[in-house]
Length: 279
Image 1 (cartoon, one colour):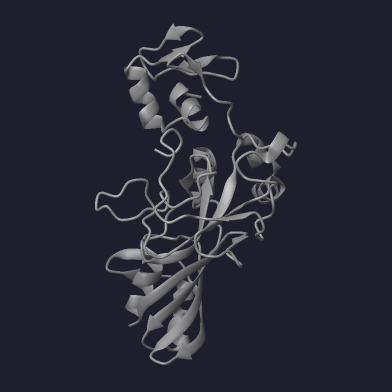
Image 2 (tube, rainbow, N blue to C red):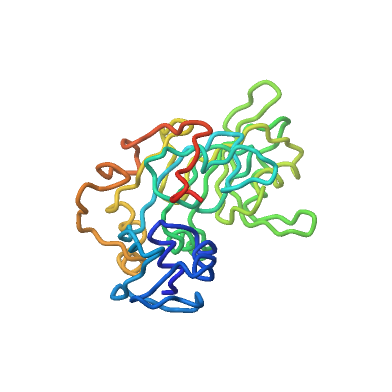
């Protein structure tokens, strides 16, 4: 892999930051100062930054996070709004999100320390079902919801099939459960608006086999490695560098409980990242 990727996987910085550090003359491979990030490295190579060896690489890991409404899924927001990553517990390593939830959407957001795992989970070919509960102002007929199963075209954009059911009517609002596989930006809101509904609450309750369940807003729960390997399949798990051998101490995630939800930590609102890990 490229040296910048190796640095990012070690949790030291992002790839872009790694490339800048190389250009600044801070990185050596096997004692030789790098002049360019265009260098492939393997586990046999010795990489140092400012004459300090890279920390040992963590294997790919996955966490469930209950994103509260009002947080932006980005590391830095130009508008200065609070972000998901500033609110995470400090015991987590540097993580990225698997896809995004918009600022007004709450519920399940998957986090990982590995970019390759994130890209695999986001692939349309993976085809994992995303399920949402939506509260919307207005009324809708069962026939209109049934028609969503065939997909729809709205303002020139094509949306895939959505399975939607009417759960209950509550005053001027309806509660719906929706299941879809694409997850385009603001897809649920846009499709329901085309039916005359205005979404005023949207909660993602599952992403593939991973469910929100009883996870409280702001809490994080590590997905046990066995569960992750079972869901990815042995071949993909091997390609991503996952193994089932126990690791001493289960660092940065506790004893490795299942995604059903026991190893949890409540995020402190506005808690800053540690500079080295959370840029």
